[in-house]
Amino acid sequence: MNQKAIDLQAQGHNIINLSIGEPTFKTPLSIQQAAKKAIDTGLYFSYTPVAGYADLRAAIAEKLYTENNIPCEPIQIVVSNGAKQAISNVFLCLLNPGDEVVVYTPCWGSYLALIQWAGGKPVPIRGALDNNFEITLEQLDQAITAKTKAIIFSSPCNPTGHVFSEQAFEAMAVVLSKHKHVFVIADEIYEYINFTNKHVSIGALPTLQDRVITINGFSKGFAMTGWRIGYMAAPTWLAQACEKVQGQTTGAPSSIAQRAALAAIKGDKRPIQQMADSYKKRRDLCIKLLKEIPGIRSNTPSGGLFLFPDVSDYVGCSDGQEVIQNTDMLCMYLLQKAHVSVVAGSAFGEPNCVRISYSAPEEQLITGLQRIKEALARLKPRYLVGP
Image: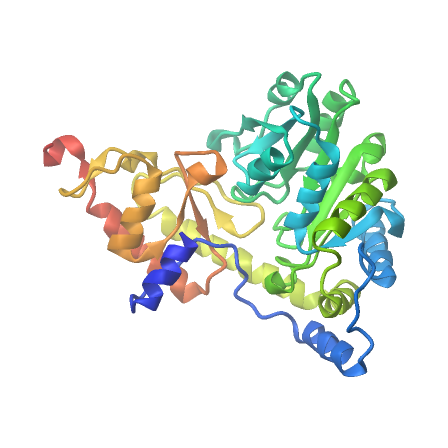
């Protein structure tokens, strides 16, 4: 949908693109300056260690201990070309053909593809909007088998905005205490875009520390998507295995981007909080505007960059020319008729929903949701418009 929006924009159409989780803020100036300084010194033009510079790995380990209560050593850190590569490395090292991974859904679609690429089998368990997309402990327990190698989830979640509480993680740990062969992959890439005032990491629980892999990076919270720096913290044996895999695929991330990441992780966090505050304001604006559209139901995300409303009331409706068969068609209808790009929930394991990014500037959000409201108003139940 993002590419379709870009193509239509190139043709001269005024498209409001609400399909991608791209921070609209610029990378904070101090981080930019650190990258320029690294270039000017002339010291960072060579290959770096595969797992990243030693000082960056040490800074990440310190950050995880002081901010997340996750005790780890630099040897347990692997810096990658984005969090997606970190997740891919884990699956390639952890999974044998036929191994199962329990996936909390709705989820970022790449989880499923990366599991399959590594020879594993995704086992989705699905949260419901009426329960704020939370998975029940019974669902988790019933999904785990002798073939289960890991579970994976994100918090804050893409696409639902769900944030796990400390109590939820403690309850999850009780279930996992019965399944000691299962690893936990916790994707925390939206950590700093959290509206609960308290981010909790499952890796902080002493009972699970030897089998939690924490994934994070700089793209979202620091507005550094194009810099391509992510990282993982894992048991030493797994981190070393991931380092070997990365060494045979891409090697280390950009040397200059790593120097920028070091400045980000050690620098002033006030710009990061200011961005998060702006996202919360945009979220509240979008929730207010969505409530003005009949037939749409939404939770209030506790973090991340997305709304994930249920729009199933519009499936089966028609504008007199075509019948909306599913949310994929609804998204194409909105792109063609309203010139607003959103993503069908089928991409995330929930076909009744669509994902709307509120990372765009407020004026675009207002215009985009008004266009959506007007386009949906033209859709009527099929029996009112004939075959």
